[in-house]
Amino acid sequence: MTGFIRAQELIGYEFRDLSLLKKAFTHTSYANEHCAKGHGDSNQRLEFLGDSVLSIAVSTYLYRNYPEMSEGELSRFRSAIVCEETLSGVASLFSFGDFILFGHGEKVTGGNRKASVLADCVEAVIAAVYLDSDFATAERFVLSNLGFSKLIASCASEYGAADHKSALQEFFHDPEVNIEYRLSGRSGPDHAPLFESSVTISRNGEMLCTKTGSGRSKKAAEQAAAGEALAFFTGRGEKIYDS
Image 1 (cartoon, rainbow, N blue to C red):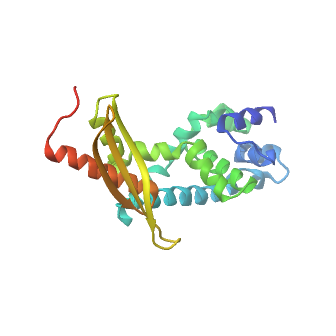
Image 2: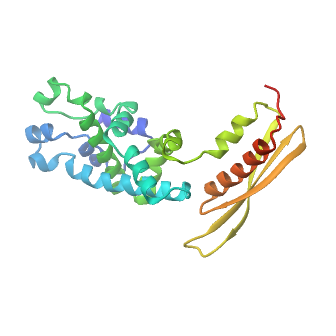
């Protein structure tokens, strides 16, 4: 289990039941050659479960953080994130190929470099974390430990999700400009809250602008407020920083 201890360090999660992680890294070829239950001891059942855990974690994140996107846009965005190319890239980032157990034939033919194998392993590891803990922990693992929230943010603009906060930050190329967000209100029922946030922009202690925005999540409200501030400055055509 020594190698799997290193795998835990890389993914930032310590298993209570380390056998779950071992199973997540057990390819069918290895299970058929070395395990009592053969195919049944491989990571394929975990992969099946992990696919669903990953999908709901990403879907929930997109729903909460991109309220302006339609159902069709959300579906296309999710498909771009939950795909073999993205998952195999995540696996490579965490060196999953170094830990997967292969049978002799699969090992000599470079199974640890196959995108499909690496992607399946990521889903299996996600399922292992879920079974070892709970959904909330698995969701945090997906978004934070494996970096899916950053992956989503990096390609949001391609799917119609405007990142006003980043655009506002880039508008001011001045370290003396301070942009501060504050939650200013919350209304509606607990199952469908509406948040209101304000953004205050100042330079050397002088307030330049305060704008508010609302959304179904705190992040969405901040994005809306940033959009209002960006429209204020770009709309009046003033350049208040030195390039």
